[in-house]
Length: 208
Image (cartoon, rainbow, N blue to C red; front, side, top):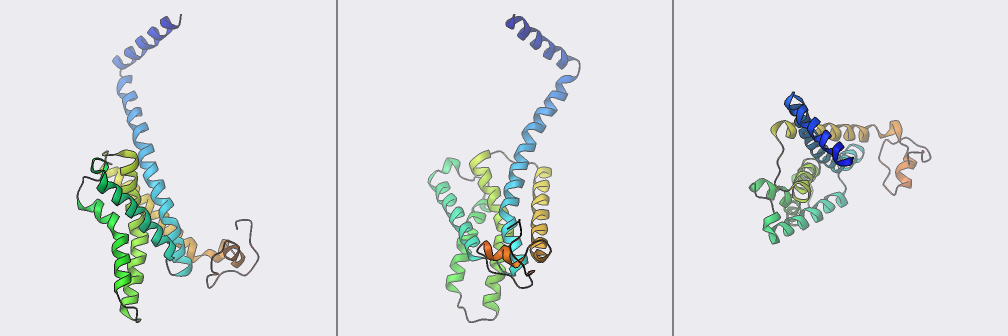
């Protein structure tokens, strides 16, 4: 009985393919493969960018622990990729540059003298750019290495992912600027963060 039903289902699928359902099923299968991949990459990029963007909006600075977390992850992946070349990035210098960016910033921060003026401002802007732009790029590289291997996104998929991450980053920065609208000074205090200037006085809200 089960074999007959299986055979009938197979015959129906074959008939459907012959009557034009085949392309529809194929298109659905392609969508099912593409949407999760782009969604995972976009979600990972958004997850990585929101905190430095919010911090920059609320405090006008990027916290050192966010930069060092980025450095630790990128260095671990870069060393692993060097040791296991078959799993490493094979598309050229861009992958390696993304992974090396945090280490380059750390070396520059250690070498450049801190006497105020343009060196400090340059390091500040470099750290901000590294966190806001380099973090999503690094997430992109990590997801390719760890989840998708050599599979590549199409130009349209790349534009969609970049657009989503940029929008989330801009919204997070705006939320940081407008933190007084939905957060209080108590929310920052109870979470262990410094209280930003311009925050709304009050006890921790349910969001805290």
